[in-house]
Image (cartoon, rainbow, N blue to C red):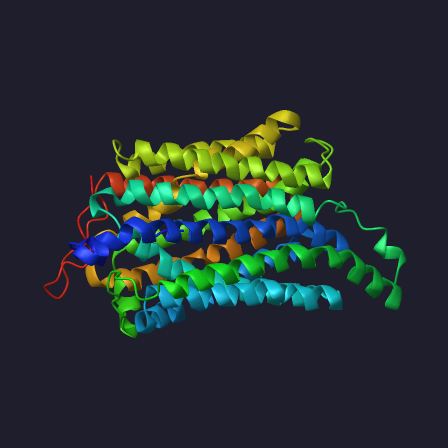
Length: 441
């Protein structure tokens, strides 16, 4: 997840420029870490759905609780980072993430679905803090003129994490399959014992992740005094004022719908590929194939970081959104290998959408960059709402047709790209200060 440069577009001091040479790789490693953690939810869904006999709407509560954290924690995270700085804020976020991972152990011991939802919420709160800090920090550690290209390149390393995460989850979470041993025939203590036993597989992977996150927190603590760009603390009223600017407010809607669409596709993918009229894949095989979806996103981001050096971001965004919409519709209305290839290929066109929307939305905000970042991070709550809507749709008209929900989301993203490209979102000066720059192209 990314943030535009805004206030960070001033000249870097000599010490900040020197720090960027060695600090930026550490920040990029953070992008990898939260990408890895985020996509593990995709492999959790088929496992929890089977263990707790959930319908699609209930299963999507995992994503609801996970992405609800962005709405709840984004603005407090911005305030926290404004007080303690980027690096210390990242340390706090990593510690909270590790704590959320450790909570999977008591949740598995209880065999209680709401406990898993609580652990996911805590994990996501930590990820939110890290993102709100790392996004502007990454933007400020390089040449502002290359922000779109550099941020997309950094997002590619986030995609390395999202590609490897499902492989890790398939090996340690779905290795035993995702089919419950007829829990409908069990009740009372027998059913509780069955759920605890099945949930036991979820302990080890999250304990491993917690240890890695703790090591990252230690590394960031060691370099906490490095010279980095200053943080502007947004005032409470800034958020409402910023919403009056269409480039940011409509960009927030685009972020809401993009994250919702991306998460919906990733969440439904395993079950979609397991269907008889698609590939009839095993749970483990479907979990591994999710890596193809995220791997294509990684490839697309490396390609996009190059393409964005030459083409207008609005144009690239529109083309990618249109292609993603067409692929989602194809997957919804076809079957077999055609549907499987179509849903996996969506990842390639998802690749540049988030960083491009984020950078376009906040470009030129000046000292309001932190406030704009908080608003856009709140918009990530789309990952909670849209998958729930898609799950409800799947329960009513079928899993395949539920893919029309993300297809509709991509349509608006294409419209936003066109509006930015045509200069329709120029903001007027308010109070004698230009709070948002004119369109880039």
